[in-house]
Length: 346
Image (tube, rainbow, N blue to C red; front, top):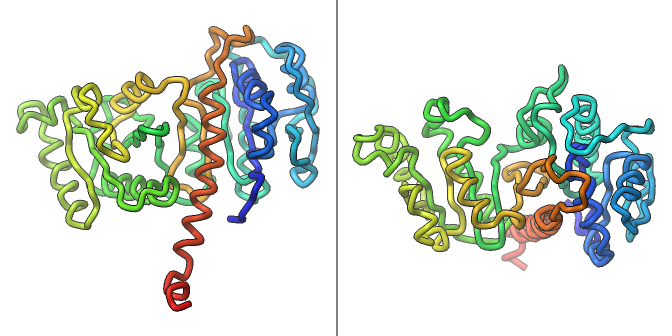
């Protein structure tokens, strides 16, 4: 990781029939953001000029075929394809899904090779991206395979962070996925991320129960008593400030979440419904635990408003800012923790 005043932010364009192109344009129309980062959009000059014309944007793109050709102070477009693409806003299209994959693969390659510093992904359609060489339910699963580390979906705002034990798992299968090994691994990932990505030296983490009322002493399931409580006890004995399990139904409404640096939800909707209720439009999806940084907005393709100029770019802009700040925090953490004995002797 290198120290950069102007961090290179790679952007995968996502589903071209959704709102991705619009929110990318709206984000970088504010030229002040170019003082913080250098964007590289992985798409094509023809596609981005179509978006520019359709949304009457004032952005001037700098087109490149190699990331080494980028220019700081400009919005760079890396050409992943050259042919014209037929865009039908609001329509699910398998062909459009192929372009979303092309963009993501090219951006991920540049991220792995450190040509870009961070990756921000515009929304994809999880159905139309499925192909013989791409069978992933979303960005997180693909990046977990391509990058190093143990990935974790971490939904973040300035004052709220929610991590998941299980993410894209059917409700009927959740319990069989939750084990002592999984709980320890995910909480360790969150703990380390809070330290190095968010500069919290001694994090306080709350864990939500698996069953309603955390099982009511076995009346509504035994998993909380048999698996969750004993595992949390072991983690506490290891010196981590981990608390719970808490009944999920009252945890957020009582504002108890404000007492913690992060909350661990046992499954997708248990964590994301309250998160998006409290912060929709400003939240960020951060893939914690990997050796490279990836963020995305907290919403999907929004086909119902695609092409109408109505999309709110707030969450995407926050995703860009979050990626930049996490990169800086991670760099500082690496400097502080590198050869601490040697530093102490100076």
